[in-house]
Amino acid sequence: MAANDGEEATVSLVDVLEEDEELENEASAVLGGSDSEKCSFPEGYVKRQALYACNTCTPKGGEPAGVCLACSYKCHEGHDLFELYTKRNFRCDCGNDKFGEMECKLFADKEKLNSGNKYSHNFFGLYCTCDRPYPDPEDEVADEMIQCVVCEDWLHGRHLGCVAPDCVEPQEMICETCMNKAHFLWMYAAQMAVPPVTKVSPCKAEEDVKVEVEHEEEEKMIQNEIQSSPVDEKVQVNGTSSCKRKHQDEIEGSSKDVSCSGCKLKEIKASGKSRIQQGAVFWPGAWRTTLCICADCKIMYADAGVSFLTDEADTVLAYENKGKSTEQAEQPGRDPLMSALDNLNRVQQLEIIHEYNDMKTELKDFLQGFAAEGKVVTPEDIRHFFEQQQSRKRRRANTGQFYCS
Image (cartoon, rainbow, N blue to C red; front, side):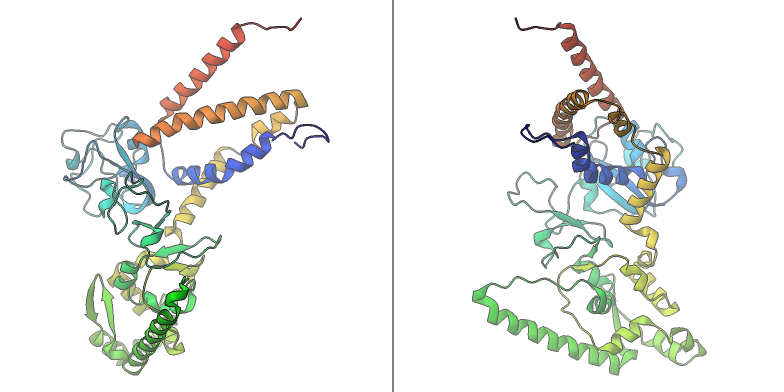
């Protein structure tokens, strides 16, 4: 609502809501794709879900474990929890052998261990190659953290080995370690990944350019060797070199060669494009759809443990969109608050704006306490907050009205 000429400028409730919409959408999207009432264990290894690690029940030095959203509310209320954002192919551990005598309140009949789960230092509240907590009380550098879509670890921007591109388009990042484990991804990166951003200081410009030229020449030599002797190609798998000569000979000496005649990866090799194999790699939206899915490439993905890259539903963006769709389905139509504002006069609208701003400030202060202690906000906590708000409102109403003579 705009102010009239000569009047003090006011911010409408619509402006305030739009300002917070992006953050609210992100939060609801991450949690919206997971069930807050039922333990996810019966669903098996869920393709992607919001997860937490309980530092109270499974502290560092013990066995790593993860719990689903519902169990974080019902079974670990008041505990010291690490928010893990989302993880792929994970089954809720709450109440299994890793938790000793504790039983899950939502689904007690669990297997002793979930052998298919993958764990990392994230489950002990540690992140990045620097193996530090987040937020880090000893880190005075303001730095964002970005998640690798392969290992799903979070890395500081300054520890990526490159400069993160300044782009608003949804992107996925693969860290250098994971790129080297699935070495064929460097070939794709040369053709479709976001070009690396470098910041060259004037004093070292000449030296850095020389090094970059040397890298490019080295890359061309490697590509030429690969193209001239494809049967000797080696692919880096899980940190080891796996020779594919036997597999290549079988393919070339059989009628199955027709299945790979349109292999996109071979076309990329033939193009001769190269890229410095250093630092994290940023990929544009929908880049996964361009990956080759021929029989031989699928085997290569499986060997490198990255078969999920060919599944578009695996992405965090797909998970968030699912959460948003679920929320919209549960709350169809226009926002009731916005509809109500249309029926109020200017004075009433301003009163609501002031009340909303006051509540927003108090709620922010209330939630910051939970964030500082690393606790999960439960529905009971929110209910208690609004009960206090209502109580204060009644006390203000009971003080009576005052008039100026």
